[in-house]
Structures are given as C-alpha cells and as structure tokens.
Image 1 (cartoon, one colour):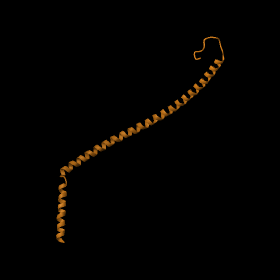
Image 2: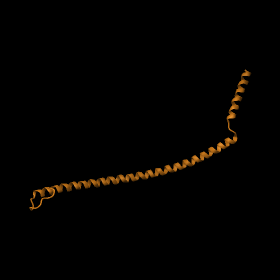
Image 3: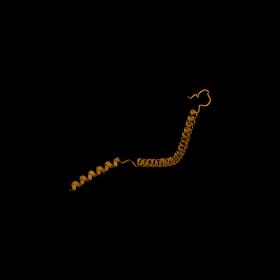
Amino acid sequence: MLWMTRGESAGLYRILDDISKQQLPKSEMAEMAENIKGMRAEMKTESEKTGKVLAEIKTESKKTGKVLAEIKTESEKTGKVLGSIAGTLEGMNKTLKSIDGKLDGNPGPSGPKRPDQ
C-alpha cells in the first residue's frame, strides 16, 4: 500500500511539473495583464462611443418620426383639398354639359358651325 502511494505521489509530481512548465514566466504574465488592461480600456472607450452614436440615432429617429407624422397630416389635408377640387370640377362639367345641350337646341344666327360639330 505504501508503494502505491509513492507511485501515485510520483505521478502527481510529474503532473504538477508538466503544469508548471506550461505556465508563462511572470514577466510575460505581467505583460499580458497590461495588454488585457489596455484592451479593456479600449473596449470601454469604443463602447461609450457606440452608446453615444446609438443615442444620436435614437434622437434622429424620433425627429424622423415627427417629420413623417407631419407629412402624413399634410398628405391627408392635400387629399381633402384634391377631393374638394374634384367635386368642384365634376359640378363644372355637369354645368358645361347642360349649357352645351341648351346651345345645341338653340338654332342661333345662321353662321359657321362650331368647330366641335
């Protein structure tokens, strides 16, 4: 049993030795830590910039929404005006047809015929 423990102990020493060989020297680890700090600071700066840009986009989007609402309102007003104009033109067309019919029934002076006849 003691022999087994000694063998296991030797195996564990080998494993620990392999792990320690895989670790980087302290100077390299310190350099990596500094690089990571720099990257984090850079990421934070970029994140803040992105946040500002997103806030600007949100503001512009709200402005665009207001402008689109105004355009819709003006479009509806224009539609009503055009509808009113169309109604007026239909009334004028009926009046002109009525006048035309009355003129056709009136022989009038003998002269040249109207060009549309």
